[in-house]
Every structure is written in C-alpha cells, then in structure tokens.
Length: 262
Image 1 (cartoon, rainbow, N blue to C red):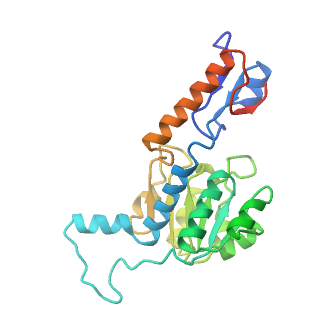
Image 2 (image 1 turned 135 degrees about the vertical axis):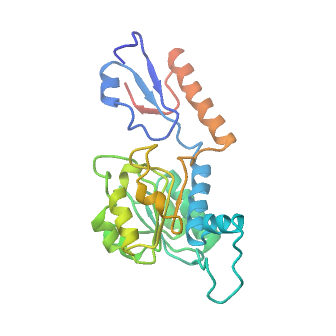
Image 3 (image 1 turned 120 degrees about the vertical axis):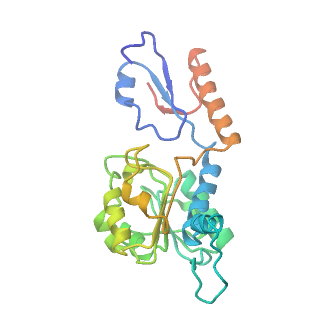
C-alpha cells in the first residue's frame, strides 16, 4: 500500500479477505471490498460434489474403470460407499454458503441439519429445521461435517487432533472455506487411524502445497484445487462486482460491498 501513492481501494475478488491488512488499509484511508453473494450457489454445489465424491468413491471408481478394473456386482463388492440421504449434516459456519449447503441437504437429501455459528440463524432454523448446537455436539453427531466459516484467530486449526478424536469413525469432513481451519497433519493422522472415514478438501493450509499424506490417500480423500467458485457464470459475476466497487469509489460513491468503512 505504501508503494502505491494515491491508492483508494483494494477490491478483493473473493469473499474472504484475510489476505488483506484491513487495519492498515483503514489507517491509509483505503477502502477494502469483497465479492459475497455471487459465488454462494456455485460453492454450495461443489460442496455437495465433494460430499458425494467421498461417500460414493466417485473419483476412485472413475480411476478403476479407466485402468480396466470393473468390479463384478455383489452384495459386498469393492467401492461400496455410504448414503448421503438421511445422514446428519453438520455445518460449521451457517452464513450464506453454509445456508445454501443446508438447503440442498435438507430439501434434496432429507438430511437433518445441525450447526455452529457466531449467532443463531433463525431463518434457517424456521425454514430448514436447522438446530443450533454446541461445537462438541457438532463433532459427535455429524455424519457429514462441512466447514464454511471465515479464517480468524479463533477458527484457525479449529479442526485438529481433539476435534477428530470426537467425531464418528464413519464421519467425513468437507472443507471449502479456508485451509488453515483444518490442521492437515492431524487430519492425516485421523484418517490413517480410522478416527474419521474420509475427507473432501477444496482448500489447503499452505496452497498450492498439499500435505503428502493427503495425496497418498486415493481411496478416502477427494482433493480439488480451490475451485469452489470456478464456474464461468460465477467468475464473471465476481469480476463485475469487483469492477463496480472500484468504479464507485473512484467516482466518489460508496462501494457496494465494503468490508470495513475507511
């Protein structure tokens, strides 16, 4: 910021803004904006793609067919998975994206929804039957636990050894929020020790580096390269919103999605 005289706005093309020193921007009278809302549905779609990918071994099955392996049908054949339908969906962070995931789970898969959030999401409770629970209950009761919270000092490594030890051995963890919410080394150990059954990750602690233990687990872990919002429609909308924020500030108007007023 000091290297750009006259800087007036930092328009982040993402919802999260932990990559920006907002306090430093405020001190320099620089507006900080982000792009919420427009990527909600596409990110929720990918979340369910990861859920089904892990539970039904979709990636592993594709790899098997391409390598010439086609298991004979049987009551206990290879690649037996688990149902998403009717399983308890736990959500850590019931904001825009978390609510969109809850809606898909409740309406499409008849999944009971439990959640942890900074405040109560009354609308989700009334419309989706979502139940506000303690973090301990979230860990103990979730069959599918999805992370949709922002990265803060309080949420960093919220999912570590103690958390995994409290989860069901049959549970799967899905993270499309920010990588550092999960202690990847602890996750690898939990998967190896059978403390949880699987994981679907779109974000990582030290992107683009991925823990080698996760790369080795091709049967229980699905990995995608931070593509939660990567649809043509959504990326166009994100770019347009960022540009609109810039034009507003340069035109002397308040931006549409101000992170913190400068």
